[in-house]
Image 1 (cartoon, rainbow, N blue to C red):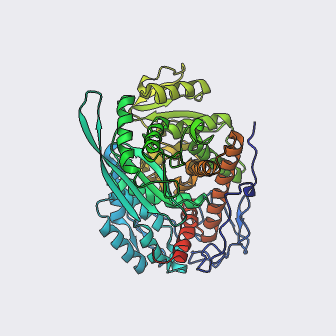
Image 2: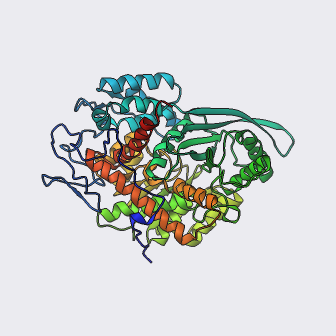
Length: 556
């Protein structure tokens, strides 16, 4: 059955920001376009196209026209206005070890013709010279901030303060394997910003984790949490520990050692971690148990807990469900629906699993799932039964999709392949990891007829891929907006823990849908006001709330 469309005001926690005494860039004013004097109606935030006073129509889900957009990020070397961004075309990043190369090249080639912004960018690069993923994340946001900074120059130093974490914690994590040998991994917690509330963000256990990755994730988390309208700051943590191939006992001993140090720095009103890649229900249980043992208190210090011991309904499903709800809002704006749409999904972890589950429930046809070994392709769609088998394989057996035995007679497993080369794709939902969709992958999706890309992972598309989507009119839902469902329901879990109560699945699901709708409408409104893409609108809407709060709180 179709999902009820909740009213935006049905969520009491998602209160609107009050007007500020500081510069408010989100009030109606001229767009950033040098060739247009259009002024967007501030009241036009309802579903559908946005109409300017001179009768022009703009849809944030479609590529903006040249005369409205000052910040179409051309990957060809070209200068537009005094606030323009200048690029040279990036090389294709390829696969596997190319993530760092993509990020380094992007940061090196980025140049702002606004001298104040360029000077700030040079200082940021100098302080973080060996952190390519972090610089890529900062650059992606900064590229879209130019019209705001032009109107409110006081936001330039605010942005420079924002990209410097309030606190970075790094520690060793010794643990013993089943044979009695001692191993040492490195643990991290970056407490990035407490401007809007206590630090909030996940823990990632993966061999690729380093300070640059944690800082990139933490920076993205600030704006993502701001978009939810919940009182949450931003942070992130993790370790280069790899839980794959480890026994339950080894994972437990690692988690207990990790929490022994982390417990010094977190608390229900200070910093509330959650899960991420490599940190699922098993790991959250071990971490929470050790925290409770050390502190002798049962509090909502971790989210993602099981409902039986303080967790929220829908929390495991929230990120995947939220991505689908966000995509549904975008399609409804174009008088389209998910019903019958063929969807390529990457990943087979928590986000991908529940993305596929919700797609099936809403009548879409998910045709792929993937992991590091390759891609499962079901041309007629992955069924609920097949999804259940994949979830058992990944969550309980902890195996690879290469070991999956449930393929239909038409199904195929493509070893070492990504899911972006399959034919006849309407929607793509990258739900695996950062920079997984390259420029060539994006072109393959365009050639396959893809009309929408909704990011379920954090920063899964390279700058070249995003530019390809925009250039070809593909609707693009950026990660910090589309995958905010997880942290949104984490915020709801915190509220339930504080009140010592539990909401039903239906109540939480309704609140999640309302939050995702609000995120879309706020991002769309900012995009329309400044004549930028939905990606830029999400960045602007998230940043302005944090920036004005930082100004109000002084130099802290």
